[in-house]
Image (cartoon, rainbow, N blue to C red; front, side):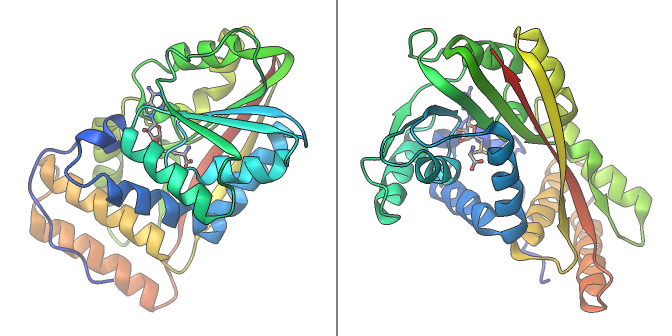
Length: 278
Ligand SMILES: C[S@@+](CC[C@H](N)C(=O)[O-])C[C@H]1O[C@@H](n2cnc3c(N)ncnc32)[C@H](O)[C@@H]1O
């Protein structure tokens, strides 16, 4: 891996305000790249199986980004079903509409601008309501889950999936530095970096019953482009946050490349999927 130049500037979680970023299109590319990474696609599909989305269902996705999950949902519910997707970012909603058309799903998904904390739908409108890797980016996940429960019909399903950044295991010769960079950045840029382990509690607090948890693991042993970009951003943010200097960050990334070249690279990260019945 050739580390990108470490940039200076303020480190924040960009998914909190994508439209305010200098180049919102780069987040569309990131989400699409993640969606196409085979191990990620497997994690998403396992979660969607857990949520039991059936043909003909009316489904809501909250925090739909570029539409990766909604496109899967449209294929699952088929032409008799209906998928509505909400995201606060206008740039994401525009891109999601364009990408759905490109994938032959134009007109099958209703992408709208909206906030998960105030969903513009009547009570009980959806059979299934889902949010995938959204709750770690928000200040009040309880409010979003409560809204998801409100718009789901009695007997319907609410499902949430999130990674948990307290569970990153990364092979690196300098374990202390690795912990400083990974934990230091995650704790300071995300409102809730450990949201994964909170999901069952959030669903129960919203009054949902029969809550189930499924833990899946993102595993990479070759330093795939998605993992590489993730680790480069962590290094960049560690510099921006003053956790390490640029030279130390480059060296840290260089050691990961060396591990990959010798076949010793390993990164795993837990993804938690939880569902409950209204
Ligand atoms: C990491 S992306 C996940 C996108 C998509 N679910 C996926 O898995 O590809 C997080 C998404 O949450 C959205 N988001 C942030 N704050 C939100 C809020 N208050 N309500 C709903 N969505 C929100 C962001 O705009 C972004 O699209």
